Amino acid sequence: MDLHSDPVWQERKTRAAAWFERLRDDICSAFEAIEQDLESAQSDPAPTRTEAGTFERKTWRRPTKDGTQGGGGTMSIMEGRVFEKVGVNISVVEGKFSPEFAASIPGANEDPRFWASGVSLVAHMQSPLVPAVHMNTRMIVTTQGWFGGGADLTPMRIREEDSQAFHAGLQAACDRHDEAYYPKFKKWCDDYFFLHHRKEPRGIGGIFYDQHNTGDWEADFAFTQDVGRAFLSSYEPIVRAHMNKPWTHDDREHQLVRRGRYVEYNLLHDRGTLFGLKTGGNIDAILMSMPPVVKWPSPLSDISGEIA
Amino acid sequence: MDLHSDPVWQERKTRAAAWFERLRDDICSAFEAIEQDLESAQSDPAPTRTEAGTFERKTWRRPTKDGTQGGGGTMSIMEGRVFEKVGVNISVVEGKFSPEFAASIPGANEDPRFWASGVSLVAHMQSPLVPAVHMNTRMIVTTQGWFGGGADLTPMRIREEDSQAFHAGLQAACDRHDEAYYPKFKKWCDDYFFLHHRKEPRGIGGIFYDQHNTGDWEADFAFTQDVGRAFLSSYEPIVRAHMNKPWTHDDREHQLVRRGRYVEYNLLHDRGTLFGLKTGGNIDAILMSMPPVVKWPSPLSDISGEIA
Image 1 (cartoon, chains in turn green, yellow):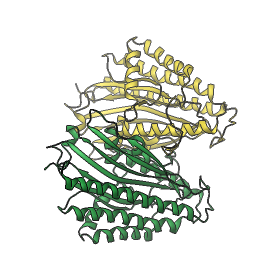
Image 2 (cartoon, chains in turn cyan, yellow):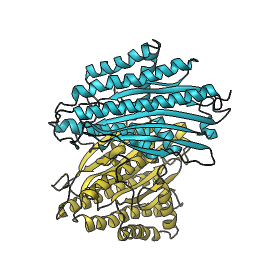
Image 3 (cartoon, one colour):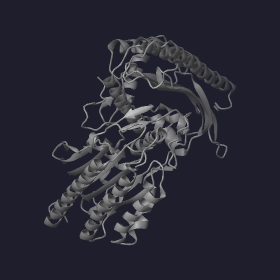
Image 4 (cartoon, rainbow over the protein chains, first blue to last red):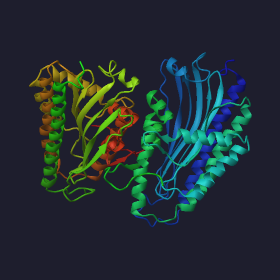
């Protein structure tokens, strides 16, 4: 069946893309409210910005080459006093996979055309006491249609109650749909966000799922919506719990060094980043995940950057 | 012929390793003298260190697994007031290539044993007016023996006279050996140090050569020695010409953003870095090339980080 001309799938694409846009709006509103609600930041060094941030948007178009590419996206970026740098991308793109890529993508061998839409977010925080976070959900259509995504937390120093709360929020979203989801998607996340060259996890994990197609599109879409909502409702209280606490110079240095691990992960291991960079994706949108400031000190320094 | 038990090659290995060590010593002495000779640094922001730096050393051993690995190296690291972070590594390692690697390495298919020694250097400078630099030379022995290496300059903003002087120094070293070398090795460098994802060169180039074996080992060794000397004699005057000039906040911000390109290159494209990280090399030694502080600002910012 040609899903690209099928009116049922046309409606599904429209609904999914509209959801990703709405989730983006909800997240941006919630994050701007957090910026407003900061009470104090008696910290060393002081945050690089003192005024509450607001999101700015920038739209990009995918280059159309031989009529085989199309679409584009919108980056929403905020550099604030709680969120040192947060980017929320939404995109709707369509085109044809090259034969090499088509071979590795479900349903693309018979027909290389694809449609993809999603929302992705990375937040790097001013306070070393507030974890960084990543969330992405997406819908892909070839001759098959499926969802993928997840959310994972990267604290600078582990606080057990934050980890438990974050995992519990995602588990509740999973369990509403299928009790088999959470253990499977949690393990998938732990396996995926791992720095093989250092034999270290990137953070404390979360969930990751891909090629998710149970045969019930409505259920799969509802699950993906719940993942987005659970991300926001799990992360927001963690930010608010810690954002007004003072931090020390050593906390900040450790944060800047740990961010190096984030860069190493994204440029060495992250399949989405590498896929985007190697296929001529929008560089600004792909590298919006890079932290605003990072340090790699001398290996003789006593700042290890390891998670602890 | 088994080069690993041949006394002629044994002596060659010893001489090459001793040269790399001596070049390391000469470079460290010259760089420490530069640190002493800094006159002023009326700059915004001020350099992060005000005292003249000195090199510290750290030795590492390569893990021996099933008796197939061996050797180690020494990192020399200085965090100074001219050299914000400079690392000079020397190493002598031997072992057996895995079958996958052996297939891509000259002479290793018949016999996977290898011996390798070299010196490698990356310098990131306090002043945005002083170019960063990279140099590496090495000797490899399988069932064949060869040299490789090069040097390349990464200015933050291009100054034509620096570029010409750096290229001229390397060209003079090449021309003493073979007038065909410089054009070939300069092009190789331009092709190699290129950020494909951004379609940007990493810097202004220099020379790069590999699998260099003319059949006259003495001549090839003399050439490799000359490359090391030419690197030092070309780079030192460029540092001294600019290190006492004041810089502005905007100069420094541009430098920190341009350093992001260096990170992207090393983690996305540099074959040596990826080879080392994927084969269990010493992470501290491999990632000593990372800049001490780096920024990736919002894509809405007006700091592009492009070389100009």
